[in-house]
Image 1: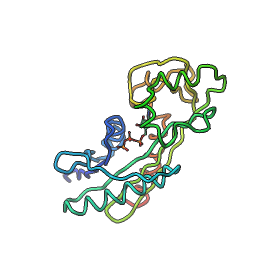
Image 2 (image 1 turned 60 degrees about the horizontal axis):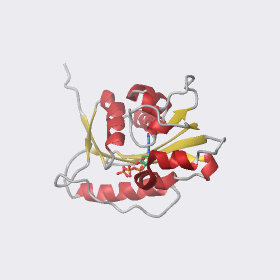
Image 3 (image 1 turned 135 degrees about the horizontal axis):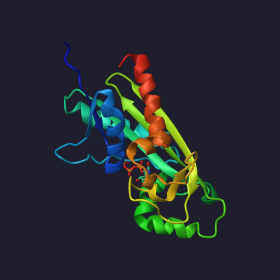
Image 4 (image 1 turned 45 degrees about the vertical axis):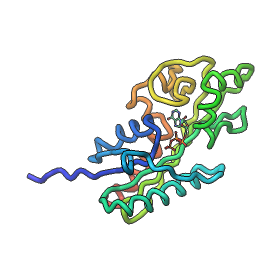
Amino acid sequence: MYATVVKRLLFLTGNAGKLAEASHFFEPLGYQVEQFLIDGEVPIVGEPQSDSLKDVAIAKIEQAKALFNQTGQDAAIFVEDAGLFIDELSGFPGVNSASVLNQIGLSGILNLMSETINRGAEFRAQAVLFTGDELVFGEGVCRGSITSETLGESGFGYDPIFSPEGEDSGRTFGQMNKTEKEAFSHRGKALESIKKQLDLLGR
Ligand code: ITT
């Protein structure tokens, strides 16, 4: 009988919701997902001022690699950058989704949209995994619409005001469990793309 090899995956993030969803995806694949901490803290990394999620993700993984090299450990490293892009608001809050949510909350977004008929929006995610040898990129987009009120308490961030396309009963991510959300979500798609590439690489 062969021992199961558990691969460590260190996720550099301060967002507990993103960490929980990445764990839900990777752990059945044989990864042990951990938050990347140094001395018990999430290391602070600079994020460039850029409209490109990919530029931000690359900046984060390069800094994570440099920090990780100092630890002398053996693990894959993972980062992800995501955001909500609302059509009628010309892509706002976009790359600033985290800070905008802190500043105005879900009620602020709903107020901005109170007169708006066009409720289309999309979540985008750019994930990057460093295997130890190479970078593997995964992108995901999830189209949907902004609801007129908050619905549900699951998930995190903008989940209670976003209903994905294809969800026939109009539920928001906030009304779904992780498995249901993953089937629709930008993160699920980005991670699925990375998984396929790892399979091709035989990892
Ligand atoms: P790290 O950079 O530390 O990973 P963060 O929260 O700052 O964490 P992002 O820069 O990727 O991460 O911010 C994206 C924000 O977009 C996030 O804070 C949420 O508010 C929102 N967001 C991203 N994915 C989401 C999802 O699946 N559901 C709801 N909101 C989401």
